[in-house]
Image (cartoon, rainbow, N blue to C red; front, side, top):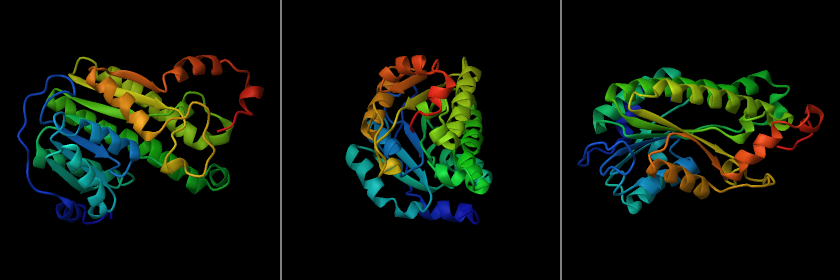
Length: 277
């Protein structure tokens, strides 16, 4: 769907704009607009659901095949959103990112919160011998994220305010042999987002970096949950709690992982090499 991008977006839009009030520097503002990049993401939808209503009158879901998002849109309407829009978004089509952002701002005005929730896990065994697959994982989970975050940061800087929510992973804190392709992409994203957060300091724009552990959901279906696993709902609860406190910085889910990885970073490599996913 990389061609005729504008036509696809036009077909997916629900016209209309809810009343808005001024930005108060945090996500408790009434009438805000939330953009979810990865409109089918379990975590992204759960965050939007918690913000819908008094904290966000408008939610924009960006995903491939946006015409098939009616179930997700109805879920957010029931949660209290006045307007739930759906727009076509192919994360790997870098040339479409600017068009998407401009289209959303033209239709809905200022974007108050962006939840960047797209990504793929990939197949580690395949990626170790299939260079194209390894590159595809890194492109979606790192290159596409860097590109769209750079475009979004420029837009929010121009507004003078707004919030970016970025999902890293403990997989990127210290990359494990068992999932090093995915982990390396998350390590790159974590570093980029941390640096971007510092670059945005003083601009009125904040970046919240969320580092979940193993998340039990569609992406990990069929895999054995790791210790200290969480659900999309638990990740969303932690994310929204931080947003409501007006926080930037980083959030670990669950919080005990912060202390655990302070120790795991020190494990000798021969032991670390045998660590599971």
